[in-house]
Length: 142
Image 1 (cartoon, helix red, strand yellow):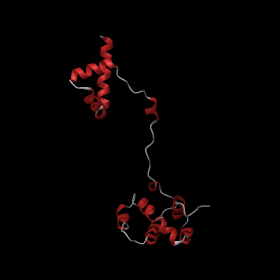
Image 2 (cartoon, one colour):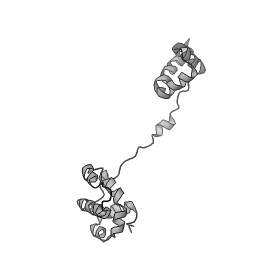
Image 3 (cartoon, one colour):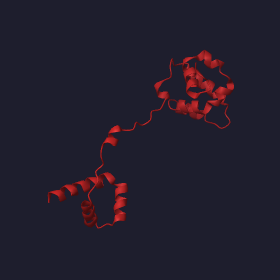
Image 4 (spheres, one colour):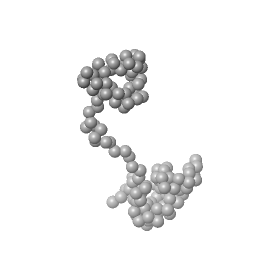
């Protein structure tokens, strides 16, 4: 049994059960006004912006989106936004840690101090680590 007071249950009713949607109380529809308008703005931004007025009747907005929802037989895929997945391989990779010799050589070569080095690492970490790795390899060879 779907609970119309919960947002995603309400959405499912809206798209899949038009008869049940008509029976939902006006107060409940008004309660979901903001999020329903926000979800529909993904596919229909101009229409959603037209409904984005302070003091607009939230019940009427949800009823309007309900008419649009009747064109669908299920909740469309565009309705839900995707989030970024955490990359598992990033956690598995070990980050290169430069040796103190390589850091000292880098500081001397670029005529910078430790404060400037920390700034370089903050803004150009990838490039700096690549350069330090090369320096480390060269120091090991010679």
